[in-house]
Image 1 (cartoon, rainbow, N blue to C red):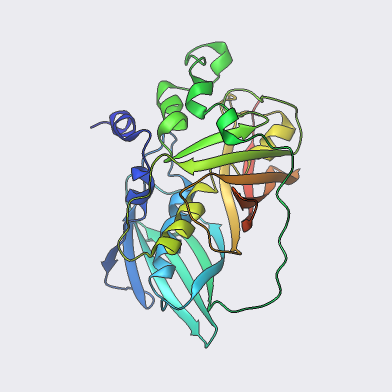
Image 2 (image 1 turned 120 degrees about the vertical axis):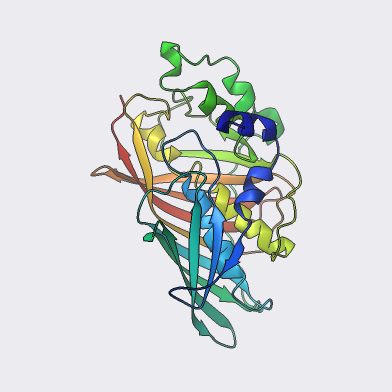
Length: 312
């Protein structure tokens, strides 16, 4: 199967995500334990950064006791990673206390470090509670077009489509495991809506997440969110700069990433990803995002800086 055929065959399912989360135990070479995983197809020169974040999340989760949950993770992307190739994740058990555990995860490909992360876990406990409010006046996801619907009228090879190919259209439409619906509109081939430093994205897996060995349902939800969050976090920066993904000459790459998990959640309904551009300068952009459950509960927060160069 070619990459395009593979993506088409599984479009509209969450299998690409769950395949990315499958880890194989390996003999450690540097730290306390090791795992290998394979990056998934995408129509770009190098692998999707969410693969590394999610795979490192699973490696860290599988190294701690089941009485504690991941509450924060901080990552740096060191080198581009090859698509469809094996990545080796080495986990160092930095500390196990009564209430918290800390882990370092370092990823290697072809013998070189490509990604590094620190993860912290917490035994759930009681305490005061405050949560950010979900943005008001955001249309419900059922009233918004899916990416596939939006892209039906965009024909690759035309001036309006920019650098979009049939492969990238298929990938955006159904090859990312999640149905994504933008407010005010997507930035695939042009900036739909105003050039404002904010947007919202409703997202939901195309179908029920398949079980992944070594992960309880709550852990699988965290790994899935870690995977999905990288797809659109730089889009509010692109939007305010008037840039679209298919603009000729545009180059982007993830530089660093931070994520905090505040409350348990499920991945069986829509989540609202409210995003804000915090800065754009010196060829870098910083995006901030908050995830809200359908009932408005604030479940996670993301910050990511990325390289942004070129574009028209």
